[in-house]
Image (cartoon, rainbow, N blue to C red):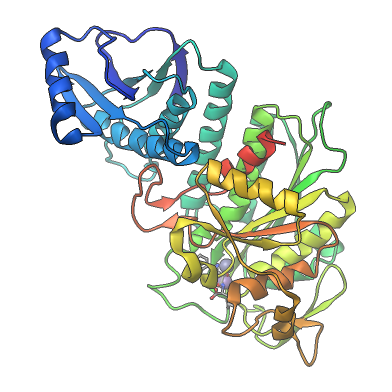
Length: 473
Ligand code: BES
Ligand code: MN
Ligand code: ZN
């Protein structure tokens, strides 16, 4: 894991990322080099410049500090990621961020991009050139050590979430996922309880059990709790994450190669919930948060639930299960019902729930909807833009409930071809009695190509969003 540290001096031999609104040579480059850089920057009004000086990698980025702060931060994260690539190419191990502006958060954003962009999932490769970059030094007396610590925690949490999502189902099944949460709890200091199949049966979690029926692996239901002594909130926040460790579609089998290949990513919501709790606990935020992750694989094994089955859910309501590929809502419904006992201030679920959400806005953002209060929604949306895990909200009108009507049960698990992301959300709403927000991360959870500091494959989306949301509570 790449570590961010604070120092008050640039080492003369170190690689440097200079953030400036007007380049000044303050770190002792020879006049000749400085003159060259100044001339280059003037030419064509360049905004970035890379220069290799006796084995030292120098990257200069000229920023317009009058730009909107959130956009500027994102600009620096992206630049940080490209600098990480450059330094790895030169086999560098360390980089100094030297910020000539008075905006300290720009150093943090660049560091975040460097670390997140430096992520690799290489553990299953026997011959692999690992990145050489190991540490990112922020040079500034003005940056708060506290914020560096928080940033390290959330970057580590994001990398952990990515690792879990990148891990295939033959390596990470529902029990393994629960064990990973236990390890997170142990390292960061929060409580983790894992319910096994027997307990899940005793609780009559019909939704989770129905999805698990076609699998040879047992389901798990993980309950995580971080409750600091000085928590600011009286009622807890509850986070619910979809933990489908693999989604074949079940008997409503997905076609491969185009839609099943990436389905190891279907526990990305669960991974984000565990990792967010890790970052929150590790940074000792003063907020009481509970995380719930129902987990199983979705397979067409012998007793697999069959289209037409009527399932009695944990809350006693019934679902006509017409498509076994709409499995996420089945397991989340029981978790949302389970959450009622906590009388939550707000419950947020994260789920790679629908292809429709992905089709609507692609990998650029998260589809959101729900019954949360206007203030809660505003805060979530604000955080989503702070960390560039942007939420686009869809309507949550009751009209859509009509699409879920069933002739034989309380509702169907599919709503038909229209408004697929919304009908999924409206299905889930029936299992809530508290302020609720649903985040469909199907688009951004797992991406086909590297995009700045988001690597190909798992992105860890949701972790930074939740951390920022709770940090600002
Ligand atoms: N896990 C999928 C959704 C998904 C699609 C996630 C693409 C990531 C990328 C989900 O379980 C699913 O299969 N949804 C169905 C629902 C439909 C049958 C109502 C879908 O969106 O096609
Ligand atoms: Mn599915
Ligand atoms: Zn799924």
